[in-house]
Length: 103
Image 1 (spheres, helix red, strand yellow):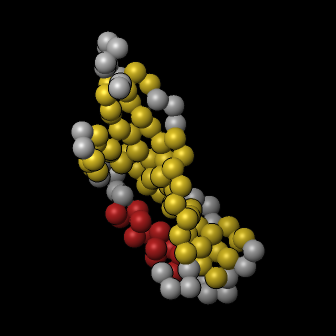
Image 2: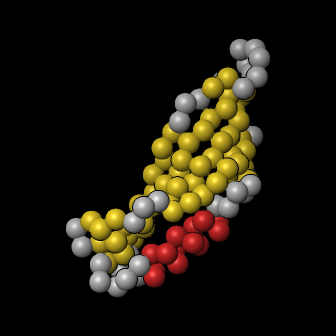
Protein backbone atom coordinates (compact mmCIF):
# COMPACT_ATOMS: atom_id res chain seq x y z
CA UNK A 1 0.00 0.00 0.00
CA UNK A 2 3.02 2.31 0.16
CA UNK A 3 2.33 5.43 2.21
CA UNK A 4 -1.17 4.28 3.14
CA UNK A 5 -2.42 1.69 5.57
CA UNK A 6 -5.35 -0.56 6.38
CA UNK A 7 -6.99 -1.28 9.74
CA UNK A 8 -9.02 -4.51 9.87
CA UNK A 9 -11.82 -5.03 12.40
CA UNK A 10 -14.51 -7.62 13.05
CA UNK A 11 -17.83 -6.28 14.30
CA UNK A 12 -19.75 -9.31 15.59
CA UNK A 13 -23.51 -9.48 15.51
CA UNK A 14 -25.89 -11.58 17.57
CA UNK A 15 -25.53 -15.36 17.32
CA UNK A 16 -28.84 -17.21 16.96
CA UNK A 17 -29.89 -20.85 17.08
CA UNK A 18 -30.21 -22.11 13.50
CA UNK A 19 -31.31 -25.71 14.05
CA UNK A 20 -33.06 -27.73 16.72
CA UNK A 21 -31.40 -29.51 19.61
CA UNK A 22 -28.65 -28.71 22.08
CA UNK A 23 -25.97 -29.72 19.57
CA UNK A 24 -27.70 -27.93 16.65
CA UNK A 25 -25.96 -25.28 14.61
CA UNK A 26 -25.73 -21.59 15.43
CA UNK A 27 -25.88 -18.80 12.86
CA UNK A 28 -23.16 -16.21 13.38
CA UNK A 29 -23.38 -12.82 11.67
CA UNK A 30 -21.04 -9.88 11.55
CA UNK A 31 -19.19 -7.27 9.58
CA UNK A 32 -15.55 -7.36 8.56
CA UNK A 33 -14.48 -3.74 8.21
CA UNK A 34 -11.40 -2.77 6.23
CA UNK A 35 -10.63 0.88 7.05
CA UNK A 36 -8.37 2.34 4.36
CA UNK A 37 -6.20 5.36 5.22
CA UNK A 38 -4.42 7.54 2.64
CA UNK A 39 -2.56 10.83 3.20
CA UNK A 40 -4.69 13.92 2.58
CA UNK A 41 -3.75 15.99 -0.42
CA UNK A 42 -3.49 13.04 -2.79
CA UNK A 43 -7.16 13.00 -3.69
CA UNK A 44 -9.61 10.18 -3.22
CA UNK A 45 -8.62 8.20 -6.34
CA UNK A 46 -6.30 5.69 -4.65
CA UNK A 47 -8.66 5.22 -1.73
CA UNK A 48 -11.54 4.43 -4.10
CA UNK A 49 -9.31 2.10 -6.16
CA UNK A 50 -8.33 0.07 -3.07
CA UNK A 51 -11.91 0.06 -1.77
CA UNK A 52 -13.03 -1.37 -5.13
CA UNK A 53 -10.35 -4.07 -4.82
CA UNK A 54 -11.54 -5.09 -1.34
CA UNK A 55 -15.14 -5.18 -2.57
CA UNK A 56 -14.18 -7.37 -5.55
CA UNK A 57 -12.29 -9.82 -3.29
CA UNK A 58 -15.26 -10.09 -0.90
CA UNK A 59 -18.11 -9.90 -3.41
CA UNK A 60 -21.59 -11.23 -2.63
CA UNK A 61 -21.59 -15.03 -2.54
CA UNK A 62 -17.89 -15.44 -1.76
CA UNK A 63 -17.38 -18.53 0.42
CA UNK A 64 -14.50 -18.93 2.87
CA UNK A 65 -13.95 -22.23 4.70
CA UNK A 66 -11.86 -23.09 7.76
CA UNK A 67 -12.22 -26.63 9.08
CA UNK A 68 -15.94 -27.34 9.26
CA UNK A 69 -16.99 -23.68 9.35
CA UNK A 70 -18.14 -21.98 6.15
CA UNK A 71 -18.46 -18.21 5.99
CA UNK A 72 -20.61 -16.61 3.27
CA UNK A 73 -20.30 -12.98 2.20
CA UNK A 74 -23.74 -11.35 1.91
CA UNK A 75 -22.61 -7.95 0.59
CA UNK A 76 -19.70 -5.50 0.53
CA UNK A 77 -19.86 -1.73 0.23
CA UNK A 78 -17.86 1.44 0.92
CA UNK A 79 -18.94 3.64 3.79
CA UNK A 80 -18.86 7.40 3.94
CA UNK A 81 -15.44 8.93 3.30
CA UNK A 82 -13.98 10.94 6.17
CA UNK A 83 -11.09 13.33 6.77
CA UNK A 84 -9.23 12.39 9.94
CA UNK A 85 -6.06 14.10 11.22
CA UNK A 86 -4.46 14.58 7.79
CA UNK A 87 -5.74 11.29 6.39
CA UNK A 88 -8.48 10.28 3.98
CA UNK A 89 -10.37 7.45 5.71
CA UNK A 90 -12.57 5.18 3.60
CA UNK A 91 -14.19 2.23 5.42
CA UNK A 92 -15.32 -0.82 3.48
CA UNK A 93 -17.87 -3.11 5.16
CA UNK A 94 -18.19 -6.82 4.36
CA UNK A 95 -21.38 -8.33 5.82
CA UNK A 96 -21.17 -12.09 6.42
CA UNK A 97 -22.82 -15.08 8.05
CA UNK A 98 -21.54 -18.49 9.09
CA UNK A 99 -23.02 -21.66 10.54
CA UNK A 100 -21.15 -23.59 13.23
CA UNK A 101 -21.96 -26.44 15.59
CA UNK A 102 -22.99 -25.50 19.11
CA UNK A 103 -19.93 -26.86 20.96
